[in-house]
Image (cartoon, rainbow, N blue to C red; front, side, top):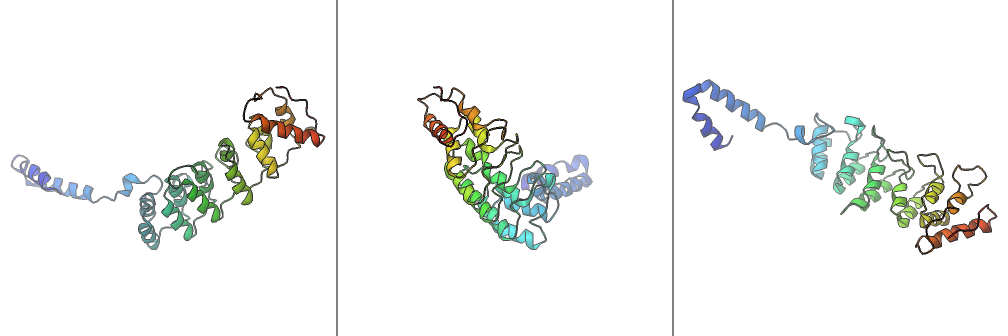
Length: 260
């Protein structure tokens, strides 16, 4: 208890009596000793898991070690089935992520909302300063490159939306299935083509993705996307559209002449 606090309540003693002073002093002392985890934690409220969450958010590796030694489990699930590793990834605490993976945290655990350490790390891979390094260590620890986001799209959709061919190549090397279906149950490449992201379509083809989704193999085949009158010929995406069209024409697939 601080000196100003004591002085203030001493002035109340003549009015209210010493008993009230003692009660108030006792109450303040209890409040001051309450663990901070009760107010800072979101997913774990009981010890020793609460201490583990506090240490994770503080990026305190020594604190993580102490909490685990006291019985905290890295595989425990808190509210909404969130795990300690999900907390670390979401908080972008690299040292905490590494420490938890080192003692067996599961990079593929699923929360109620469908998120996993992989999906969280993928969504934050551009976060500074540690986003991409966190994604790297999660994948090296056995993260599933075919994991899905809460919206059911594969996590590689993040790279597609960013036109990030380099990370698409990285995930392909890790075993990502580029013929995977998206949340609409269409092949990923046909959805990308309908979005007119022809640089990504061409990259997917170069990486080995299937593209011959004609004759009913997809409700939105690439030939349908090619028949749309955009992008404009002066768009930087148009040369990639032309490459895709020429490839399909050379393979004997049913494509119409390009309309500028």
